[in-house]
Each structure stands twice: as C-alpha cells, then as structure tokens.
Length: 454
Image (cartoon, rainbow, N blue to C red; front, side, top):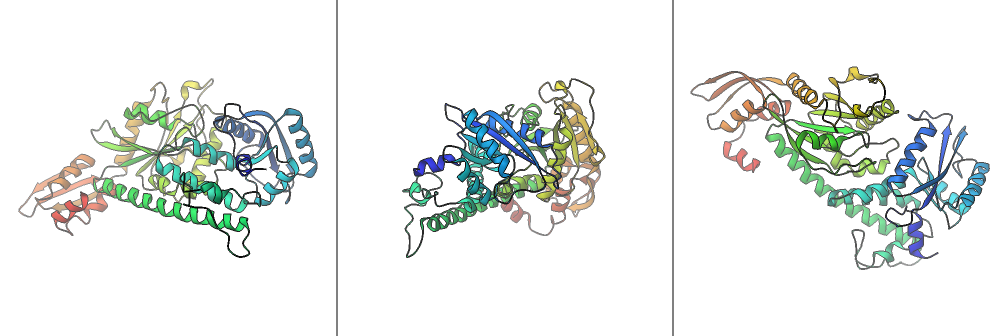
C-alpha cells in the first residue's frame, strides 16, 4: 500500500465526486448509561456521515456485557459485518464510539486494506476540518487531529515526515525526518508529530493571549456579553443573524459554523449587549477537540449570560439539553444566568412540551429564529434578566473620568447622581464586570488607564 493510500484510508472523503459507502456499527453496553439509545445514536451518526458526503448502505448493533478488548464487538458480530460489508459494496465502516488504538489495528487487519475503519471521533474531526474558515479554527482542528492520531500510528503510517516535504501546508516541518541510529520510521513519525503538536500549541497560545486581551478590552467597556450555546444544528447562527442583522453562514446541517462571531444587540431598554455565537456541541464530542477549542470556549466561560438554544421540534430535545449542560460543566462554565430558547416552534406538529428542568433557567422562551416569532420576548427577557443581575454600587469618580460616568449611565441604572467638589457621586446598579472595574477606577491615573484602553 502506498503512503498516500494509507493516509486516505484513515480519513473519509469529504469532497470527492463519488461518495464513499459506509456501514455503521453501534454497541449497546449493558453497564453504560448513554443519553441516547443505540438506534438513536446511530441515526445521529448517519447525519454526521451525510454531512461529510458519505452514503450510508447499512448498519448493525450489538448488545454486549462489556466491550471486547480486541475487536470492540464480538468476533461473531465482526464476521457478520464483514460479510454484509462485502455484499453491500461498502468501502468504509464507522463505529459510533471512539475506538482504542488496539481496536483500530485489530479491525483493520480483519477487514483488510480495501475497507476503511474509522470512529465517530475521526468523522467529527474531519467535518470540523472541512468547515473551519479562520486560521484559529484551522489550527484548533489540526491540533485535535494530530493528538487523536498520535497513539494510533502503526508501521503503515510512514508517510508523515516525507509527505511534509519542504514545509508545504500547515503541517510541514521544513524537511524530511531523518532517522538516527537504531530508529524505526515509526519512531521518527511519532517524534515528528510531537514537534507539530508543540508548535500548534504555541501558535494557539498566542491566539488565546490575543483573544484574552480582546476580552479584557471589552470588559473595560463594561458591555455585558451574552453567549449563544446549544446542540449542533439547534439554530444558533440563524438566531444571531435574525436578532442582530449579521450574515453568519447558517445551514441545515451539523457543525455548519465553527468560528465564534460577536455582534452588537440593542435592547428595548436602550442599552446594548454583545451577542456571541459559539461552536455547537454534540454527544460523544472528542476530548481532543474540546481541549483544542479551549480558547474559543473561553468566550462562553467569560460571558455574563448564556442563551441555551434548543431545537424543541427534535425528538431528542431533552437529551440534547443534557448533553450541552454536561459539556458546559466539563469546561467549567460558572452558574451564570441562563435563558432557555425553545427554537423551531414553527416545525412543531403537536403541542409545545417544555422539557423538565427548566427551573434551572431564568426564563424559557418559545420562538422561531426562521420566522421571527418570539424574538421580541427573548430580547425583553435578556434585558430583564440582566437588570436583575445588576450589582449595586456607590462610587465617587473624579470629574476627569467622564468616560466612566457615561459608561455607568449607558450600561446601568442610575438612582442618584450628585456633583461635588471631589467629583461625581453615583448610586447605581451596573453589570458585575463594570462594578469590578469601577472598584479600581481611582487606583491609577486617568492617563494611564486611557493608554491601557487604547
């Protein structure tokens, strides 16, 4: 097998003119407690495959006591799948759960060189690679792919250093890997990937630092940040476009957009907030992907409020809500105010059923981002919840800090304002981030703060 063929067999063909044919495999482990039944999870896997341009020709499930340490599913089931794959002409098998390196190696031996064996994680990573449109997104996906592939290297993966060539593409290392005394090509490849991972982490750390400085500048302006979160394809980008007039790409497919977008949203109170769209979540999201997107997901952790967008017309809406909340907990998002936006009510065929657990949210708003129904209510609820979360302050600012006085009027509610010889004394309720900034307003000269803000 050539180097190129070995590389291609480990990734689905996302852009080829002839779609690959895939056979889906899921295991229902008796001791596990998944959010979705194995059949429903395979339905979602089929949607992922279709997003990648792959044709589904069949599927199989197996109920097992525990995962087989060698072949993931039982040897008898493997033989049955092998026979079905041959009959159906499938050239790819996609497992619904992440395969261990040993599972991958053993299954590839059984199914042979003409059939690719991948898992849900590899499929999601390739979809992300296709949809990343910014440099940051591309770096994040590339890092996740390398960290996923590193423990799965075999002797057949001898193309990595040579394919890098003279540094072409983001993965290039500037030259061919050279073996030292006694080194195998596999060891060279592992070291080469290790260097690439280190370089990508350094580049992403620089991106993270830039994003952190950008957030600090927004924080100094005192403008509340509202982040849209939700399961993939719940309608976050459509909602952002409808509410702010943005032109973010939105499509009826999984992971249509990856890169965060922030737009200004005017509230009925005359105030404004920054509304930020974020990457969608999904069950069994690869841990390497969550780690790689840490800088992006920090936008969620630093927000003043979350709007959890739910596709309420989806039959698994309750399970999708739980998946999103579990992921938010995994990335340590604090318990900031949250609104549950029950999207796509225009697609409901029956009565609206609000999922259990809505008491954890400050409000639940049925709406349709597509038609605009319910958006005025959502905007009003954002204003109401933000006002409830305002912090009471009593502060005296020097006359030279008219910028801060204006900021308090713009972002907060002023109960009393008195001009004295010492400055401007205010009693007001303001967002928590503005209150924190005002606590240090008199600790440094105005000129120095102005330089910092610039």
